[in-house]
Image 1: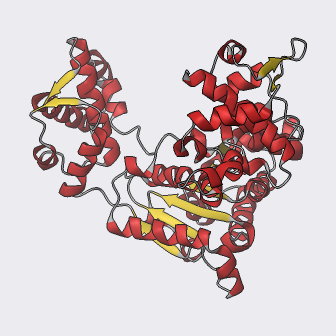
Image 2 (image 1 turned 135 degrees about the vertical axis):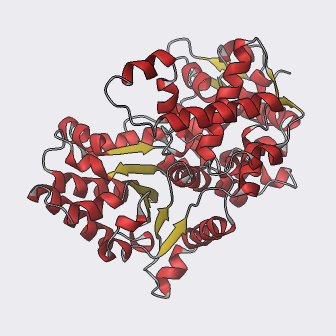
Length: 443
């Protein structure tokens, strides 16, 4: 028996079981299977287990070759559909070779076979399975359905939409303060118990403001939370509402919130929130001011409890926010520059897949005061690249210390007054690009 053989049989068996079991819905299918069966905005019975679909769902390049030697399989040469000639034999073959671990990844089969395995529970398996509303194919079909090509192009100039599977950062990749962990835990519980909160009338919850310097992880935490909770992530850079390509800015702000509500439950992340206060206090064009007023009104009207939209704002400049901006949020989460212990912990996380001789995170933390988590990642990147130029994949503590010194030297360049005549000298020195790298990290 080979894994490809088992994977293809499991795929065909899932398709047959889902087709017959009307109690199952698309959220019971594993995400990779949903991509294979998704068509014209829906997954409809009967499911056809084609060779092409099997490849997409399982990664097996020649699925029919994998199972053609089994006594209970057949293939329709015209449609490419793989099916069972004897499903009872196929089921027994599968049960003899599968285990609880595989079934825990497949709610359709977990529901069918949970009585056969002590450690398999259908409800638990379904809860662990990412729901279809978080799939990229579902998100794209929703956008196609509700916006024409011109509207969608304008709207996507304002927002960036990620499916949870497209977020690479996880909460395990981040080092959080106790306050940050506490706020995340509270919001996770609020999402889990939305019905209870609505029943007791507690609706003013689920609007967070992340405040802190660039590079301290505000955007990274918001994205990682989307991945953790299997929620689509709708990201808005508020300064983009001044873009010449957006036309009617207030209308596009409305579209942003409409998208979030269509994708709900989701996270709506609004970066550069200090732009709101700047605009309200300046002589900006009346159309832009109308857009900002529309934005503030929309924030008032959106709700985690009623609309299943978790709103997160972020700002590098909390001192520029006025009272109208502050009162839109029920929780303020501080993202300070990391202290010594946090810097050491960040270095441990970032280097966990690296081979480093005499590695001492604490000693590096001592010489990196003032650096953010993003800065530390850049330091590690430079150390790795420098080692690769010497054909080395093993780093030393000295490599990291040298990278810290180089980073600080490049970082200092950005503070120099580049008067006419000095500009060419800096370029000739070869470090001007490095100076730019030092702060291209407002995540």
